[in-house]
Length: 223
Length: 75
Image (cartoon, rainbow over all chains, first blue to last red; front, side, top):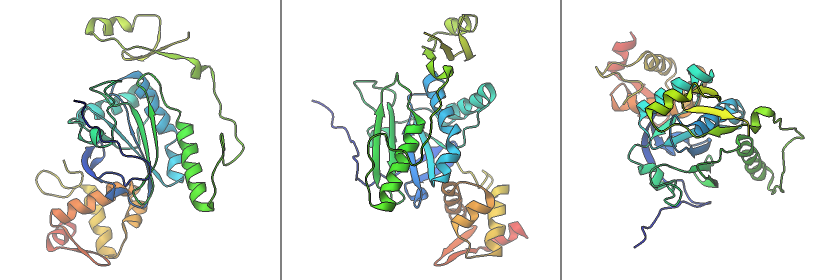
């Protein structure tokens, strides 16, 4: 018999939970009332695509803050793992992660929000994004698979669109943006991630291979 | 794990700063605390909850009262 999966939907109240994060314990959504929240899951700490996503979110954190948005991450990892990873990103990539990450080691919150998709992986969360408004209502949901990093500017555009719709009683068309702008993509955006090594031996070897590496688990190449 | 009360029950430096601000203005809002201390709002709310649970503050309709335990700490 197929197991019933809890999947919150757009328009639902954001399910409540208490959790430990890298910035202390939280009650959700109670502690975030009055703010928009971009609540997102990533598959695992110390994985390359997730590292690029975290750096992307960190880079746009001030833009999210200007829009009264609090970022909130989650994965099925321990708080110690999260802290070690955040410190690793600071040390190796020079990027400070300015938002909390939930340590969902028992996957309770991941299940509550339908972030585990067994067809993709039974043990790690997919790349889910829940946009929750200041009243604690789910306003948008995005799911990406493990292989594909999200576009943080699109998430910011989504926030702009929702806030514009609320403020002006309008809807926004395809590719709408609040101001004319050019999103800059460079050669760096064309590089792909080399799957991280899965044994200690390969991890040691990886750093001497001909890839562009920031650390043993995070290497890129040009196709 | 608490971020503003240490394992020995004493408040952290950040918590002492919050207690001093509450002592100066018992009607101070969580938003004001967030702005002054430059900490995220959710963290201020969690800290207020921890301080109340540890017996340093008591929630009132229009703000917070410091308990004797808190006043002893900041005096």
